[in-house]
Image (tube, rainbow, N blue to C red; front, side, top):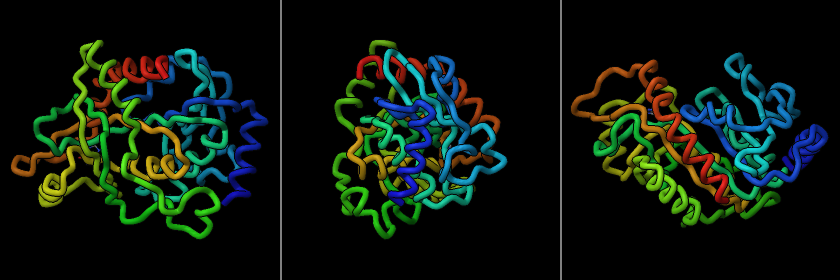
Length: 270
Ligand code: HPA
């Protein structure tokens, strides 16, 4: 993998991606952060050597290099998911590239269902810890030890100091920001009532289909990491309604302005 990483990194350096400080993965509910960035360079995922093969769905996927709140950032507009048929190594390949391009911190956003019924749809949750239910590890491959410590420590995968900054920014700006545990499943089907009950019992506050593989690899690379979920639906096993993807997307959009304040202000303070 090392040779591939070098080739991809050199391609992006030639395009002007260099000395970046912060990496950002724009999930559902943070897409409009792009409007706040002074874009210096952008490349379609399709054109980046060794990036996961783009699917039709991915025609919009772009890696962006620019300035946000005075910092040099690399932004993934669109991410790869295991449910699209990519391997965990493919899903997390861009994290390894952003690290080679200089980032020291990775900020991640996603949409998630609320397992903790004290949390309501449209609200935000700062991820304090996670449970990997994707049935595999992005670090389980031959040669991983050439890229970092194979037995990566996971005692504190989310950076305490970034999280406390997020909390104080939320407070000052009157944004409700819950804290909790995010469980990551493969999807793409939503959960059954029995699965939502199980997720609650094992200690999850929210559930989604991304983020955990990215966080594991970021920890493998010793990056500082933080992640925020937009809660798009309430997963009450005793009163479960059929999912409405339209409503999930609408909820994510509703929370977007608050997410943008949180991320922009945090980046200013980093
Ligand atoms: N389950 C899994 N992923 C999700 C959900 C959910 O209920 N809501 C948004 N993403």
